[in-house]
Structure formats: structure tokens, C-alpha cells
Length: 426
Image (tube, rainbow, N blue to C red):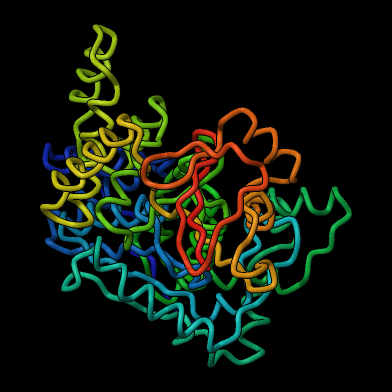
């Protein structure tokens, strides 16, 4: 478990204009850089010595389908990569079987080895949508953690105190609430931190929720005689709802594997205020250009014009050359919607009517809307129908009969109110 030796403290170097420019590119959109001065010196020394830095970021393969929230970190890795540095994309196949307690109010379910391996394959396939395959090294922490002896683990625990561990905000909240914390959860930051020792990383990136873990890694490196890594934390991207962080479990995400049209259409649902956050974290549009766009809005330009530009940029990034076509398709369908035509949004839910709901090949629309979860009760559906708010078919025919029955086999598109859509099949 020995690490590299700490080099004698080097003389502070004057910072070149090239390094200053690189640093400003790295700093854009970040939440925190610890310590800033130290990272500047690292970048300058690496430039002079023509020695790439080891830039590490860890991913536990618990949710393998990447969305734009994940790409905030990946884009920053790409920036380092474009500067000539070495990217260590760490898949926590070993720590994934422990479970990261970050942000959890209860112990997280541990993944099986089989689940971790399958999820890791998906990560490997998707990450090269953002990173340069030839300049990225994918590493698995089972390589150094799986064969550790029990005495090695005990030696690791001796290098960090319980007092420091319980400073972690997540743990303090759970202890205050009287919730249990398992010993294995205490081990997680320690084991993740040891990854930095094993890889001898110069810089580690992570979300703001990972700051504690990243600092543990820096401390352990110093404990093992290495130079402590610099830390770059990135904000968590707010999802399409404008409230919670982007997550598949919240349904407020844009997946990087989604179609160009889906990516563009979902981007159009981002609020005018949140749009600028997406510009900053997901594009390379200069701050000066964003300032000009904001001034244009103050003078009367429709914010939707710049939202469409954002949508095109995101599509072109993930599906090169397809942004314009996605925009034109969306605009065409919006035009059709204004002409009272049914236009189903991306990810419209589909409900397959079971035969148990059918009588002589028919089923009541109102019951289907309740059974599918579109509405909470029959009375709620009845009120919507009486208000003329339930439309069916391509021509948006108004449903007037609360007992209207649909015949099967068949497929029907339904709009409830202005925002709920359902495809009914049977």
C-alpha cells in the first residue's frame, strides 16, 4: 500500500498566459477549486515539463444510462483532455458493491457483482460520446481493492479518525434523526479515497455532493507520502422541472442516448431562467455572448429564440450535424398543434388495456384514464369531460360522453387537459 514520494516543495512559478487561459476554461461552471493557486502551479509545471497530469473522476455503476447531468463532469474532463492531460475514468466496480451513502437518508441497497459488471459495460459504451477514446483510460478499482488483506484494511482505517468522518453532513443529519449508519458506509469514503492513492492522481473531479469524499482522498494521499490532489467540484445540473437535480428517478432528465428530436423537444421545456445554467454547464458559448443574448431579451427578443439555439447545440454535440433537422421537426409539429392536430410529446406513456377490463372487445375511456394513472378518480375524469378538456384522435375530437367506450383491437391517442397525453392500445 505504499505510494509515490512527495517531491520537495518546488519554487513558485510565474504563470504564463497560456496556463491562465487554460485555468479560466477549467474554472468556468465549477463550484469550487481546492486549492486554486495549487492547481495553477500544477498546470504551469505540467506545461513546462510537457508532463500530462493525471485527472481522475470516479463513477459507481449504479445507474448506467447517462443523462446530461452526468455530462457536466464529463465535459470538464474533456476540457482537461483537450489540454493534453491524462483522463482516468474510474468505474467503481468494487465500491459499487458497497453503495455510496451520499445524500441518502437510509442505507443504500448493495449491488451484486453481476449487476455492477453489466452496468459498467453500459458506462464504457456511453462515455465515449463525450470523451476521446484514444486519450481516456478506463480503470476499475477492484484491481487494487479486491486483493487487499484484512491487515491492509485495518491499516487504512488507522489513517482517518471517527471525529473527522462524522463531520460529514449526510451522517450528521442521519444521526440527528436517529437513523442507523452501518460501518460499511463509514468505510466508503475511506475506500474511495484510497483510489486516489492507488492511481496517484494529481486532480480529482466530482459533484458538489462528493466534496467530502474527494477531500478524504487528498488527506490519504498526504498520509501515504504523496502530494495531495487538487479538487474540482461541479454543480449538480437542475432537471427539466427546474427544482430537483437531473435524475432518471425524478423523470426530469435528458438522456444522452435519446433521439435528436427527443433531446431538442425536452430542451424546449427548460425554463427561461434555467436556460442560462444549461448554456454555462453544457456548452462552450462564451460568457460575453450570453451577456449579449440576455441584453437582446431585455430589448424585446423572444427567449425562445435562444432556447432553440441551445437545443440545436445540445443535439449537434450528441448527434453531430442533426441539430437543424431536429429543430425543424419540432417547429413543424408545433405548427401542426396550433392547427388543432394531435402532437404527442417525447416519452408519451402507453397503456395496454388488459382483456379483464374489456367487455365484448370494448372498455370505457374514463376507466382506462384512471387505471393507467392519468387521473386519480372517475369523478375527476367526469369533470374534465364535462369541461371539454379530454381530446381524442389526430383531429383532437372533444370527448363529450363520460361513458364513451373504445373498441379493440385498436390504438388511440388521448390528450387530457393541456399537458397530459396517453396512447391507449388493446
